[in-house]
Length: 236
Image 1 (cartoon, one colour):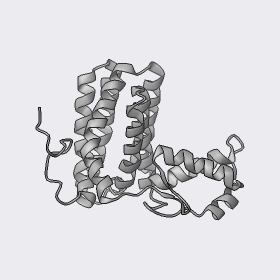
Image 2 (image 1 turned 90 degrees about the vertical axis):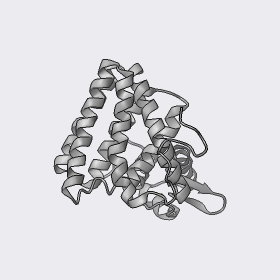
Image 3 (image 1 turned 180 degrees about the vertical axis):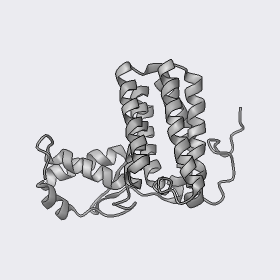
């Protein structure tokens, strides 16, 4: 049933975002313009306007004369993800602690409650989307025009490669999910207290928790230098 409060363009954008984040649409998969046009009642022009919007946000790739496809996850993009994610997450949470409003803190607490509920009774998709929303709010708190695009792009790939993390198959992984929720609570407390140093440290701890599980499935071979350190650079 169509949501009367949203336009067909917004419905399509939301549908594609969710499908990309939860791997219903796989990295590199071509989009069927005819099928989407029919399903959402859109002609070519508004359909492609949505594609351009989502390409700008990092969900899709646009190719001349070849149509749109889901953004790739190549060896290079995964390698870059592992290098940059710790630095970006740390910067976002530090800025969030400095800039968060009371209304945004309330939104973060609501997102955390949704995440807790998803851990109790939700599917892997529910958990992935709830976790993504939690971190989206921290990005909104940071409010940095230069950092936001990079952070949003990281969240897309973190959701996609983290889908396995939210399907706990062992006791250890299940315990890590519980720890992730506990760390969310600590992040909220640090942001609410305006403690930038604590928020940045929690970003590192939180990244380490999920990284160990993700590495089992996607860690690029040959990436044997410390995460967050660019090859050829000497640590300060």
